[in-house]
Image (tube, rainbow, N blue to C red; front, side):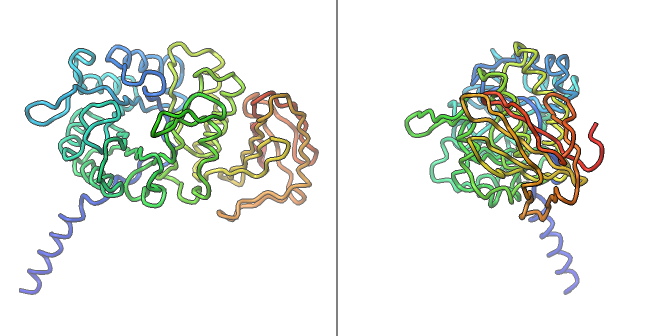
Length: 406
């Protein structure tokens, strides 16, 4: 009899715990892709999304690693159907979401979608509150690979509990879906996000300015450096399968080419998801060149998954460092001045290291080869000072290695 009860208890435990987890093995490097919100808001439709899918392939973005095509708010009808299910707006998505997902998959891309933990989305469409399991199954049936889950209209909800519910609902479908927690950092998701999802927003929405705050009454949008500077001491929470998300990129959205490079370099150094937010169909050649830079992407996608950090800030030149696999390092010198800066960096006078991860550099003992990533140019080695002119709001991003850097 005791053995029978033990078997029953074991089966109950499986039933209770079988869905109480996220899908492991996803987002082992920061996800890369495109999202509709920064440029289009809720004004999206089927033809435009197909055009974006085509462009991601034709412009070499898919081959560079951008595989997620993510619809943000505004894709669904204003009301659920009689069965309580979501469906695509019939005028803007006449073929339905399954057909759109099939098209995206046919291009070698993955299909991402959006909803919200509250009663309504931020744009006023039906939210998932009370419908989590129904919605998760719809996404799985449509072939969704990525869910961005927002935090509007969530009165009296507990953040950790709400994301726990949707995590379990996604797992129950049996389909591996990357779960993006878009909670804005209000409830410190970096402390509990690892068990709930694969990435979590650490701030409110980004906006396409260098260093500003734009107020919207009860909330604000944040410029590039406001986003970067907002959170301290959270890098320890990031790693393979669980990332601090500094929001979608504004590369190509009214920044100068120099600012685009700095923005992209910083997102690479921060090991944050590289989710494009511009209209890639009309992007300049220089913007596409920046977004597809193989060396910079490799820094972001490095297998160690260590988030970089600010090493120094002298003369308004921010120096950021990031340990890489095989003992290599990435270093970014960002010129935040409104004039060109003549950099002279004597490696032998600096001791660099990452105390958190116990990784250190001894330039007096070891000599490293230097490669300028944006210019694809060798810059000698660390036995001599590094001299360079860095333009206004531009960046010098280098990869240093004891072995030869090609």
